[in-house]
Image 1 (cartoon, protein in one colour):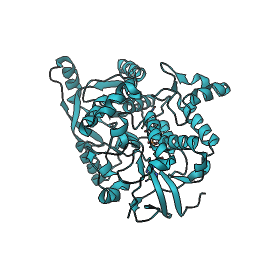
Image 2 (cartoon, rainbow, N blue to C red):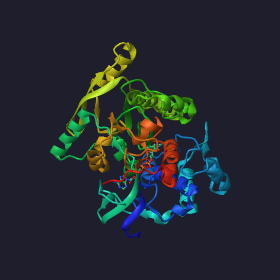
Image 3 (tube, rainbow, N blue to C red):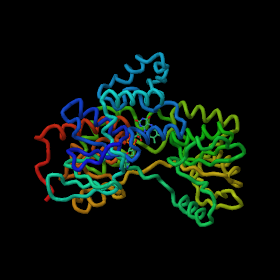
Image 4 (cartoon, rainbow, N blue to C red):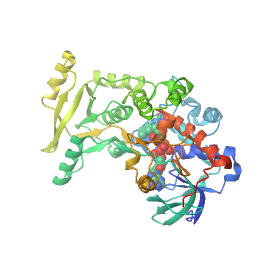
Length: 430
Ligand SMILES: Cc1cc2nc3c(=O)[nH]c(=O)nc-3n(C[C@H](O)[C@H](O)[C@H](O)COP(=O)(O)OP(=O)(O)OC[C@H]3O[C@@H](n4cnc5c(N)ncnc54)[C@H](O)[C@@H]3O)c2cc1C
C-alpha cells in the first residue's frame, strides 16, 4: 500500500480515464515529472468506476471510436488490438467507426498503466475536503488517513450529480418511511449482475439515453417486461453529440463565442438530451415487436405511489397533437403499475454542489453559469493552480468535455501550464 505523502508537487484527485489521459500526456511531455505526482482514488485502482459502470450495465462496446482512449498516441488502441489477435481483440472493433469492445478497451488501459508504470502512483484514499492555506504548498487535501499538502491540484472526479426528478424523490422518501426495500433507483446505482432472475417483474425505465437502452436489454434478458418512458420521441444518434464537436468544425465557433451564457446554450443544444445508438434502438424495436418492451413516448410521471408491493404510476402526456400515439399510450397508462422503477435520467454538472469546491468558492469566487465555472484557458480555477478536467470544464472544452475526447482536450490545455514555468500563475495564496 502507498503511504500518505506529506506534500506533493501535483495531486490528482480521481483515477478515471480523464486522470489517466492527463498522466500519459504529462509524462509524454516531461518524463522528469515521474514521482512528483500522486493520484487519489478510494478504490486504490485506475479506472475502477469506469469498469464497474460498464460491467453493471453489461455494455458490450463503447459509444466512441477507437481513437478515443487515455494513451497519448491516437493509434495506440488500434495497434494494441492488432498486436493481440490471439486474444480476439482485433475482432473487437465494432462497426461503423471501430467502436472498441469493453474488454479490448479495458485491456488496453491495463497495458497503458503498465507501459507508463503507473501502478504505484495511486493513493487509495478519498479526498474529503480541499481548502487553501498560505505558503508554497497552498492546497490542503483532507483524507480519512490524514492531510496532504499540494502545490497544484487537478480535479478529475467526474462531478455529475444523478438527476432525481421531484416525484422520484418523494417516492423514494415514501419507501424509506415505510421501511420497504428500495425499488426505485438511479441508473448509476443499478447493477444488472445483482439480478440473476427478473422473470415476472415489470420494470419502468425512465429516460431516452443509452443507459436506459442497456438496462432495458439486460432486464429483458433476465425475464422482465420493460416499459421505456421518454418525455419526447426516441432519438437515434451515433454519438452523444454531433461528430463536428470532436474537432475544429464546431469547436472553432464555440471558442470564438465570448458570451458564457451563449456557450452554455451551445453545449445544451449540442447534447440535446439522451439518444440511443442505431444499434441499440434496433434491438429495442425488435423487443417491442416481441412484446417484451413497450415504448411510452411523450410521457412524464407525475406521481408514483408504493401500494400493495407495487408502484402505482400517474402520468402526464406531453403531445396531445400526436393523437394516435397518445391514444396508444393512454390505453396502457390507465392501469400502469410497475414492480421497479429505474431512473436513467442522466446527471448534472454543478460546481456549486461539488464537495471539494465549497471552500474554494468561498475564498476565490468565480462566475458560474448554470453550474459550470468560468475557468482560464488552461482550465484553472481563476487565480489558483487548481485545474478541472471533465464536465465542469465544458464552458472551455465544449459538449464532449465529460467524454473520453474531453479528457484529451483537457490534457492538452492543462499539461503546458504544468510543464512550462512561464505559464505558471505568479500569484500565490497569501
Ligand atoms: C455507462 C457509461 C458509458 C460511457 N461510455 C462512454 C464512451 O463509450 N465514450 C466516451 O467518450 N464516454 C463515455 N462515457 C462518458 C465518460 O467518458 C465517462 O463517464 C468517464 O468515466 C469519465 O471519466 P472521468 O475520469 O472524468 O470520471 P470517472 O471514470 O467517474 O472517474 C472519476 C474517479 O474519481 C474518483 N473520485 C470521485 N470523488 C473522489 C474524491 N473525493 N477523492 C478521490 N477520488 C474521487 C472516483 O472513485 C472515480 O474513480 C460513459 C459514461 C457512462 C456512465
